[in-house]
Amino acid sequence: MQSDGVVESYAIGGGIAAIYYIEPYLTDDLDVFIPVSAVAVGKAGLISLEPIYSYLAKFGYRASKEGVLIEDWLVQFIPIFEDIQADALVHARTVMYGEAETKIFSPEYLAAELLRSGRGKDQVRVIALIESGKMEMNLFREILKRHGLDDKWNGLVKKFELEE
Amino acid sequence: MEREEFDLSKMTVQDLFGAKEARRKRLANLPFEEKIEIVRKLQGMSRALKPLREANTVKSASGDAKMRIKTK
Image 1 (tube, rainbow over the protein chains, first blue to last red):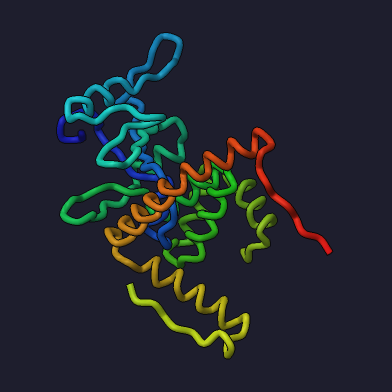
Image 2 (tube, one colour):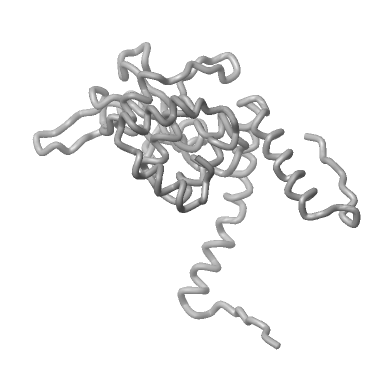
């Protein structure tokens, strides 16, 4: 998609990105973050993923639920509307999956985005990422500060009685 | 994937937590491809259980679920 100019950049976030760093667990979809430039924005501000869906339809991949079913994976394309997501995209890591290169959120940005999202399961992943020892905590704290996530972090520390 | 064997009669709670932590670390350090393969297997198991979950949801919604809680 990138080489065909459908998206200028992308990075995997969400559950699959977390699994890159921590132990595998059940997740049904693959979250792919893309710049807003890759989607059509209507006059009323409504976004449409039509450019992406029509590109993938050429390869036989059809829309299913809230994503596109690609080789048995429900792939959700998430246009970036949050600063932390945009920053995570810029700082995404290039990793190998078999012979293929792919982009994935770094653990620090992934944890910060999960913290921003704030669902219960996201908070659990933040803790798992920290416990994995694969995060640079000073960078994580700096990201939280830069994106105004300190209060959410303090709330998580209090809720789960984490050691700061 | 190898399975570790434990003699439960000789284990303490701390041993169990330790073994669980060690297992998590071992899984976390698997190659990405192997992790994705595990996720696919978990998805397969989840799909296999889906009809059962749906049937239970229907039963539960219709008040047809036979669930009894035993109390002394």
